[in-house]
Image 1: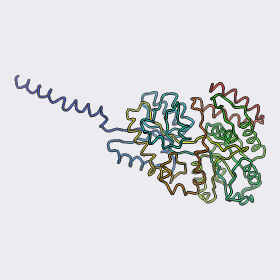
Image 2: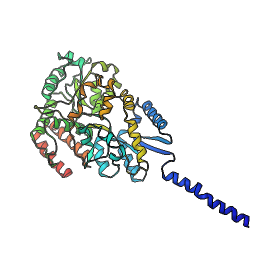
Image 3: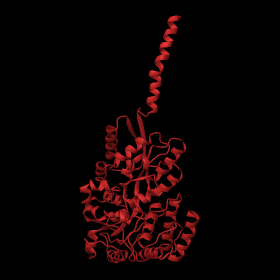
Length: 425
């Protein structure tokens, strides 16, 4: 009996050195960590090898941390992330479209990144982009890759139309003149060529394109005090330009970006506005197109400075993640100059951090990127309101009203202002 008591005492003495020490190790976060990354890009054709290498490289540099991808189609990802978050199973890292960002922040789903990434990282982001990311002075999302709505043009069609293939239009006024010449062409099958494409399809990204036109004409949807201000001269001229593009047959009616990419790829669209990475879709349809494509910055209108919304793939960290610091390490790693160089080798985009550009001589000399390196100057910050996706849809409604609907620009703007006041005020 005495011997048994001694054994029990020895066990009790040993417990703090084993069980309790193990508990302390787990509390310190020293055990294995798995980070779940919800993304649509990992499913894109041609990107799988890059994301496999990114995972392997990060895990090799961070022993004990594993990346687990949760891939969803672009149109499903936001819904799936919200379902997971509301079930208490939020992914640690989230890829986010710019139009979703305000609702993730307003819902409290994502963590502040200023302290997680540190001032050196945050202050490296171009100021115009950082302004668009910050909500009440705090940063909740970091652009992984960025773009304004650039103008793509087909140099071969320029030559056919008697235009200088090395001289892109700089203003909407010039672009309309070019569109007139391009719209006189026919393709090899006798089909009409559209001169100037602008997406107005009923999806949020098209609303961003319409808002970018507003910006480029000196308009917008709020005034300096943050109040809804839609009925103004800049917006009126932008909608009248869209109306003229429709009436003259320059622009396909109600087209989404994927429709414009297809028409551009097959030689039936001379110029169109898109995100920089959109050309990947056109090249997938027609690889021979590469040598004929030119790109330029957003256009100005009526002498106003060119402007665009920030189009970006953002990276967020879930507020409910138990591994925020490790998630921040992944963001820092994935957006390092070395990793970004590998990424833009497979799809074109613009770099959101100044150090990334300084470390990438091949990038700055790329003829598909060099003409738009000054893009931060064109970025105009948009409202961080949870209804912004619906605001973008309302903008497409206004655009379609003046084109296929035949409505006057004044009436469309009056209707839009009334609708936006109900959403944003």
